[in-house]
Amino acid sequence: MIALIDYNMGNLLSVSKALEAVGGKLRLVDRAGELDRFGAVVLPGVGHFGDGMENLRSRGFEAPLRRAAAEGKPVLGICLGMQMLLEASEEAPGIAGLGIFGGKVLRFPRTGEKVPHMGWNSVKIRHSHPIMQGVPDGSYFYFVHSYYVAVNDPALTVGSCDYITGFTAVVGCGSVCGTQFHPEKSQKYGLAILENFVRSCRERT
Image: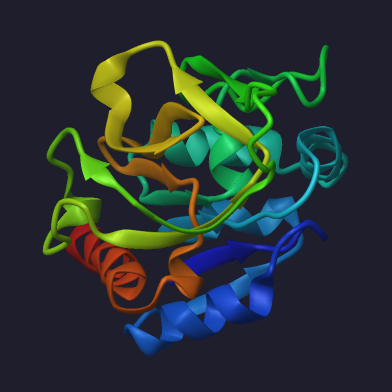
């Protein structure tokens, strides 16, 4: 059973429908005390990094999320959910992220190009990871974001994208991964990523 975290910052309906469409069994979880009972976690998110972390902390999700990652449970962060797996963000100076991955979230440089980065863009596969199984190199996914992830260790960048600058579009190490794009809005290959995540949940049980 997958826990889909409800902390008042996520597009829960579209994510839950997409996960169910690829065979995922999930439950919305808005109480941190329940999280340890689940074998896998999805952390969705749209909006401001600071608000997201404040909502997670006020609901007590911070420690259980770190514990899930440390215990090797499958964890998937989507968009803001991926960014909060990092240590910090320029969007919210002084507010710590979950720190599961080393690195920081940066604002796109001001070059005159449109920000947010919105729409379809291709992802280059940089390192092998089960989350990208069956997804061709250069596949297109749907993005909406003004800040991007810069990881400390390049080996964490499973997939990268270029918009104004190169950035990490898929982060992953072991059972924990994240996508800057919205797989639930990315049609065939977005669903393939979610199906890979659901498969990893089954394989762990």
